[in-house]
Length: 379
Length: 76
Image (tube, rainbow over all chains, first blue to last red):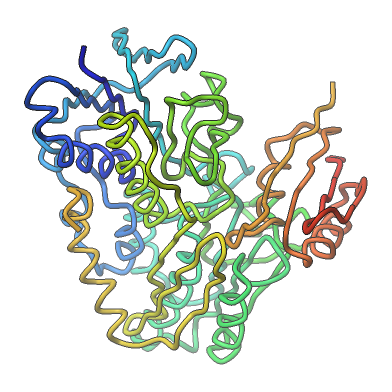
């Protein structure tokens, strides 16, 4: 009987796993010894990191998505039929259409979503760029902005931890290039007592903000937004007035995870090295879906996916695991419109940002185009 | 009935133990306790400082074998 691998979620993590397995198990797939099935909620594959550029008109929307069927290896069976209930005791997943899929190995790659509705007034009063429609709306707001105070507000938890710094520095360059530098005041808020979760990044960005005249408010956890009064307030008791509010909304995982009793908030308790769902030996978790206390970022999903591919191939072929995830994360960081830097770290090694260069900025732009090779498992 | 939630943030570089605790406290009910395990010595100062600003309640902070356990009660 063939081994059935079922992947729930068609984002970056699930897609890299599916394509990597299909490449390494080509012979087994041809002989019918292995079957790989993916359940997604859309027929499109979306490159989320590109959304950062949309408000500035630096990436075209057509560059951000491809048909998922075209991105997936042809030997992967793909259904646009989202999971409705995941039963890890019975080894089966029921979908919206009512179909039931059994599995020998399950990969949970259901990702995360923005939840601006969790904070009163945020939907009505704020802009964000983590979704396409919102990024379009922000682009329009930036185009018509005549000057004043822009608050860049960061909420926990959120994915892509460097994006708030990137958008702040890009906003600075954007308005300076338009000759509006003197008319725009930027204020950045962050939930903890420094400007970023990573202390070396916080230590790097503080003098940058000071040099550029970007104000900041730390220990700022948003309690409410008043769209009429154009004020944002924190649980710590601080009120800030704004003319334009750009928020990184709080995130949650997928509803199906909560509904299936697999993890509060949609985050699945996951072993940080084997990526097993805690309590399961045949259920693995990848990307934003885990509760591992590391960055929710595309590179995290990618490095976890590489680990999962090796282990699932070994389990199917040899009946054993072959390696563990070391916590590696690698992030490009735009430091304006013309320069960039990068950070990498793992469970043992803290990050150390390098001085920004034009070359790294170009590398990030190049990666934005090469992503499709990553998704196909070729890069 | 109040629950205790554990966040094992040992080795967490990013976003870090306090951010993990803030995320966990948002999902908890008033009266629940959040226990954060952290290998970062700074957590012992960071969490009480934030808890005092927001108005939650510190329950305990204990040094263990190479890491710290910090427990907070969600008060509002």
